[in-house]
Length: 177
Image (cartoon, rainbow, N blue to C red; front, side):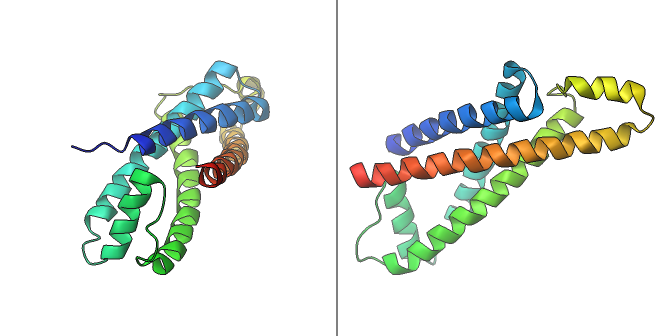
């Protein structure tokens, strides 16, 4: 069995970077405790990684017809480089398109995942001002909508910042190594 140790190390590094950045943004934007923001960031990112790898292996298993794309994907996962002169011109646009799709799909999964985990009471709603406003207001639904909008905004900002940092790390890795 061959293990993609480089890919596993990069995934771990990227997870740590994303969790650190997103938990800080969530903590500052939503005015919640550091512990709760870290729980949110960890659970959302691990959920995205699990769903992402599951989808990747499902799609990769069904790529029998396109040999250059499959070979380039394996080369990139194991070595971090594309194979020169082997269908590379067809792979690069697909890679860029897939990165854009992954960005938006993971943002959607994070927003919906946090909402679902809170809905099933796996993660608590830690916004302290929410409880005060619910007691004073008759419209709990409107307040929950506002809290969800605030959470989505914080997640979007943190997600964009973490992906920008990861992109910078990837560029540095390509230039240095």
